[in-house]
Image (cartoon, one colour):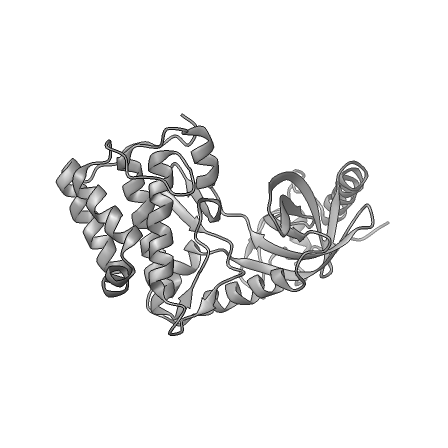
Length: 317
């Protein structure tokens, strides 16, 4: 005979034997508990989980970092200092992450610097912090990663931002003749919204390019990435740099690339005027700030297109 002691699944306290054939209430946490044959027992779940881990370990590339193990799913990008892959944490509660792995010979501690900057941005006790912390990259951990092939590299693990398709550089590759001005407006305003918060907190990104801007087509979102070169504001490192780089990015996606894209004749005149000033007049950018430029873009958009309306965006067509 093998007696069984029912255990409350919520608090772990022992339950009366009646729990084997009817619903009972836990005396410790007041949870109502019902025994059922369809319930998966912990031992069976763990055995199945270990079997799935064994299959994954044998068939895919694994990355171990700071006692955490991640299975790589697919490559996302290849930059000058790191390659980027989509990964999944190997645990009972799987989590999708983005892993940046430094190239051999890359500048030491560059990913560590990005980790430190992102941590400081996430820890800001600034008005709007709860909102903007979700609109900035969210660091998970930094450490020395070891892959299944034995290679070691510095690694930065970030939460995988849901719904983001790719970068504006990828959009340019698909839109060789530029995107519609309506879409350039919301992209620009999303950038300015985040830059306004970051600048108010005393930080400058410093390298805003199409490759450092991820686009979320369905919800018209923009995520600024690539924060390794971010710096606190100084007399020589000012918000005007970011604001002008943002304007040049808009010129790029409107024209379809090139190093110094012109403002095409197809750009509505009110928007073209703001775009020219924001990309070429550092003094005006410094005085207007992100909020002032955003208001100018908003007014230009209304003059060109009337009341705001949602227009579906396709990054590929």
